[in-house]
Amino acid sequence: MATDATAKFQNPDFIPVPQPPDFHPELIVSTHDGLRYWQFMIAGSIAGSVEHMAMFPVDTVKTHMQALGSCPIKSVGVRQALQSILKSEGIAGLYRGIGAMGLGAGPAHAVYFSVYEICKKYFSGGNPNNSAAHAVSGVCATVASDAVFTPMDMVKQRLQLSNSPYKGVWDCVKRVLSEEGFGAFYASYRTTVLMNAPFTAVHFATYEAAKKALMEISPENASDERLIVHATAGAAAGALAALVTTPLDVVKTQLQCQGVCGCDRFQSGSIRDVFQTIIKKDGYRGLMRGWIPRMLFHAPAAAICWSTYEASKTFFQELNGSSNSGIVT
Image (cartoon, rainbow, N blue to C red; front, side, top):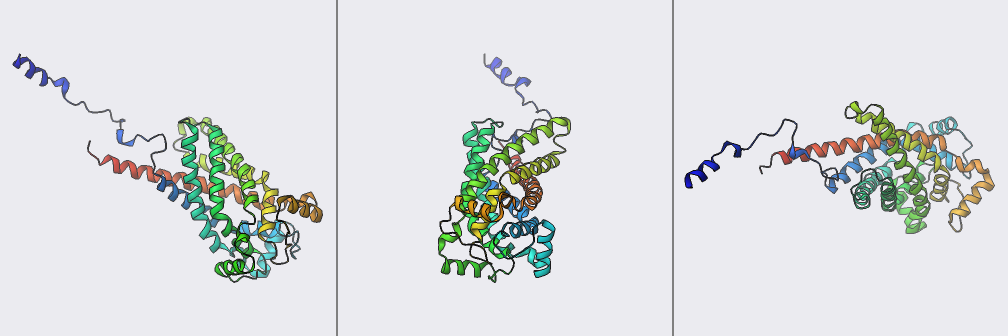
C-alpha cells in the first residue's frame, strides 16, 4: 500500500502544467478597471488640466461674448470678439485668468472622475452597459466637482473680462471676499449644477453611444484604434452637450461677472430673473450668445479630456499589472 501511495504521488499527472501563452492571470482586470481610486483622481486631474489649459483662449472669447448683454464691448461674433481682445490686450489677453483655471481644474476633475467611478461601480451593479447608471453617476460627480470648481471659475471669468479691475488671482479673491463676501464665490453654483447635470447626461449618453457605434464599424481594429475612438466620441459628445446647455451657461456667466466691467448686478440672483433680464435686453438670441466658441471649446476639449483620461488609466493598469506580475504565489 505504501508503495502504491508513493507511486501515486510521483505520478507525472501531478506535475504543474505550463499555462498557454495567452493566459496571464496577473493581468486580469477587476470589474472596476483594476485601478485604485487615487489613480482615478490623478488620471482625472491630468485630463482636466490638459483639457482646460489647451482650450483656454477659446473660453476667453466665449466669456467676452456672453457678457456683451450689459458690458461696454460692442463686438458680437467670434471674429469681432477675438479682434477686440487682441487689440486691447494682445495675445496675453487670451490667457488672463489661466492661473485660476489651473488652481481649479486639477482638483475639480480629480473629484469629478473619482466620484464618477465610485458611483458607477455602485449603481451599475456590474453591468458596464447600464446607461442610466452612467447618467446618475455623472450627475453625482457634477454636484461634487462644481462645489470645488465654482469659486475659481468665478475668479477666472472676472479676470477674462476686458479692462478687468483685478491684478491677478489673489487680488481678485481678496477683493471679492472683502467687498462682496464669501457667498459671491458661489453665486452661480445652482445655475452651474443645473447646467452641468443635463450637460453630463447628454455628454455621457452621446459618448457611450458614439463609442459603441465606432467600435462596431471595425471591431477587429478596436484595440489599435482605441485613442481615435475615444477622441471622436468625446468630440461628438462635447459639441452636442455644449449646444444644448448654452442658455444656462450664459446665465452662469452673467451671475459670475455681475457688477464687474459694467455688467449688471442682480438683486435676487435667481435664475429666472437673469433669464428675464437677458431676454428683455437682447431677445431670445441673447440666450445663445457664445454657442459657437462654446462648441469649439467643448468638442476638442472633450476629445482631449477623454483621450488623456483613458491614456492615464492605461498607464496605471500597465503599472499595476507589472507590479502584480512580480508577486510569486
